[in-house]
Image (cartoon, rainbow, N blue to C red; front, top):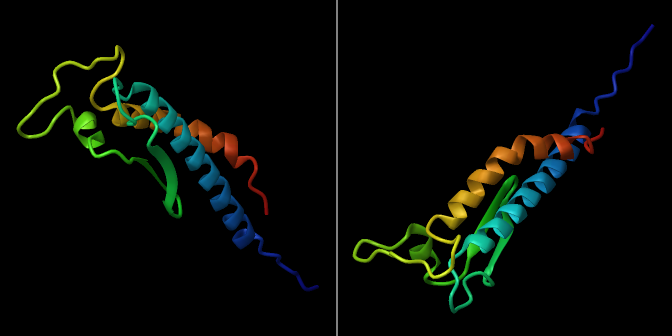
Length: 119
């Protein structure tokens, strides 16, 4: 009596990769929203000129497209330091803190999206 094995692992693997892409994109979007809310703001387009996009499979990038974004993120450079941020609740490491918070939520986000994977 012959046995036929139907291998659906490649289909499931492709579906799971797509679901994980969605989970990472959602995490990047939420991190961007948090970073925008914490970004220093007085005058200028720092908060508005930012986005997130997929760079490679399972790799998202959050970018701020303003020249002084790096200066604000790190609280200065080698010769100058930002001492006072004009908006309460903002400050240096606005993007790093948002990313760290979303990193803690990532396992739950993978579980939430993982149930959509199918063979």
